[in-house]
Length: 376
Image (cartoon, rainbow, N blue to C red):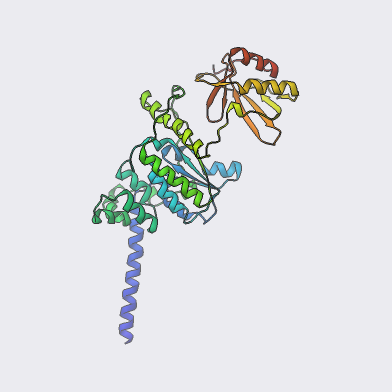
């Protein structure tokens, strides 16, 4: 009897050790999304219910948002749940999985890849989002929805990535053994390239059906969980095809209309400039701030700003900062052109102008000098 017990105990121990070694080998061989960043998989190392903000999106997101900076500068805890060429359908299932462990105050989704018409860009890109996801209900739902055309054998490799990556042993890098979860899903790239100003897009592009379907599901999921939903666009300029750039960026204009219909679009616009109590001005070439508190001057500046129209004023140095402090305690920041241009930036790089005559009058009212920055 004792001998049988020992054999059983030895067999169980052997099985447990085998599973541990198999799990470790599978983890090493699994392709890490964005190398040492190991996106999605590193999400599970975060303490549960500890995030203020969860970000979703493609490579524009994980190069454009740094959780370490948000924590260091503002005390905001966040994670970048990004992956290359992440579609809205991919974002939806990643968010659904995230909600099993986190209840952030805000979900912020980068808008760029809404231009894509499809559930996923390629199997390789989809794997970069879901190979790191833990086995569970959400992963099963994702496989059955996004990969419904796959056979049972093909689907199995999504639950056991080792079956897909078992031949990758000769392509292993140091980051396969030592990832950097402290990056919180972000990636750092110090590459700098000169680019030309692509200009402002003025014509909207239609949002594809698949993107709209899953965007609506994301918004509904956030509402069900009592989480504020925010969309934003990260600027980029490396694009060789201007028409393609305009078409993809035009999606954001269509997105504004949709979000406004859902009471989710709260952009800063000139017509909303009112109730100003005080104006502070910091010109690029002046050490001393200009402070404007005269009621009559402030009301006239309000009128001029409210009458400004959207414009494509590119190539101007928007180097002068104008802070509008409101009576309700909130504030708005404008970036005034510092040379002969007659416009300002409000919000996410939206340019407006009141016209040359009104522009000159406003600058005189504010006591702003006209000076061209050295880099011009």
